[in-house]
Length: 79
Image 1 (cartoon, rainbow, N blue to C red):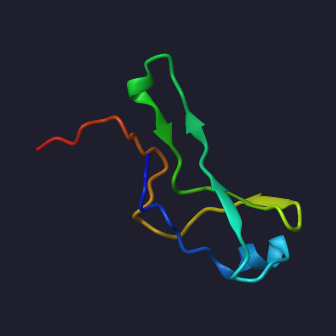
Image 2 (cartoon, rainbow, N blue to C red):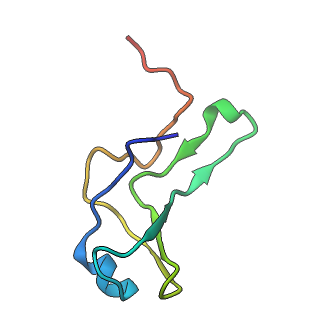
């Protein structure tokens, strides 16, 4: 849905998960899937970060205004 989604994670994330900045992490976004799929939204502001190496995960609130709490990928922007 968001091919260029690559947020910069704060140092605290790596410290909490017990990994270094080169670690392979999975980022998951909370998704709301209503009956009308066209109204689906993704929370890009607060992803869940998972380290499979340490088997730890956490949710982080990003300090980046490019990522909204309710991103609607099927919603057409108005011209």
